[in-house]
Amino acid sequence: MLKIVKILLIYFSFILSFAKDEIEISSETMEWKREESIAIAIGEAKAVQGNRVLSADKIIIFFNEKKDIKKIYKLDASGKVRFTSGEQSASGNNATYFVDNETIIIKGNVKLEREDSYMSGEELSIDLKNNSSKLISSNKSGKVRAKYKTEDKNND
Amino acid sequence: MKNYIPRTNKVTKPKNNKIIKLIILAFLLILILTLIFFSNSKNNSLTLDDQVFKGEYQNNKKFIKIDKLKFRGFNNQGNPYLLTAKEAIKETENIDVVKLFNVQADIFLSEKDWFFLNTKEAIFKIKDKTLFTDNNVKGFYDDGSSFSTPSIEYDFNSGIAKSEEGIVMFGKWGNIKADKFSFNSFKDVYSFSGKAVMIVK
Image (cartoon, rainbow over all chains, first blue to last red; front, top):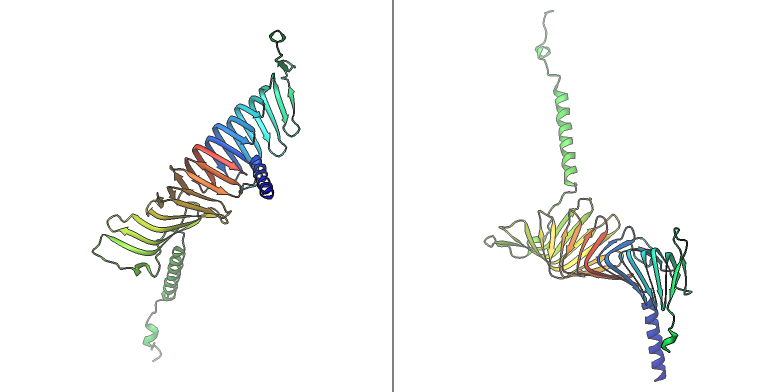
């Protein structure tokens, strides 16, 4: 009986590990140019990989092999970009998600929300592998803005 | 007798005979070469098997039944295609339309790449070179990808396929589902609309 449970657990973990790598892209219209190895998703475009969701007006999907799709190596999103991964979410004008490196760079009027904190800047780089992020300010202000919610002690 | 000249010497033979013969010969040669050239040209032609009229053929009926129909042609880009049907019915009144049964269309996308369509029933318009079917179509590509759709219209000349009833595409890479699609086989571009979902492994 234990053996069967073990086998089932291995099977499901195997399936889940594959499901995590899978990328699902949905949109109102999609154009797949096989010769150029790209696909263009337009209108409420959304790319989902596990708990990571990238949504935008337009997403360009880049494949790493000509003609025959093998793997997605890059996603270029533009227009009302929103990226969520777990409890953190970020928005901006454009974004590039490097699938293999598990990094995303969001540019233009960037806002990052993480649990109780809120930050804004011009360029955000998130390393999803190491769970680290770097926010760069715009050239004009030269500053990154951050807001933190603090617990109201009076309520205690 | 010194003034005597034989009569044969007086007969003047036309000198142009040889030239005329040569011209006729050259003309015939050109004619033969032209015929050979046009017989090999890439024009659409309805080529029928030896067993075309294997079934019973009746003149008094309003249709012709053709077994093992083959239609060879070349699209606007010069790539060949072959349309075959196990059985075909052609109305004698409407000569442009052929109803096909157990159909297969082999289409070359380029010199190397190809795909073929399979369906049970279809209508082929000889003049427009279009194939229409609403009887579940399956398509197979040389790279192992395939698709299925409830209906399709394929224009052999322009290489454009359209479907308003949804499509599911499968491959080693994953799958795509969409409510509507069109496919430009010349440019190798697919357009999906009405909620398109692509899953890449």
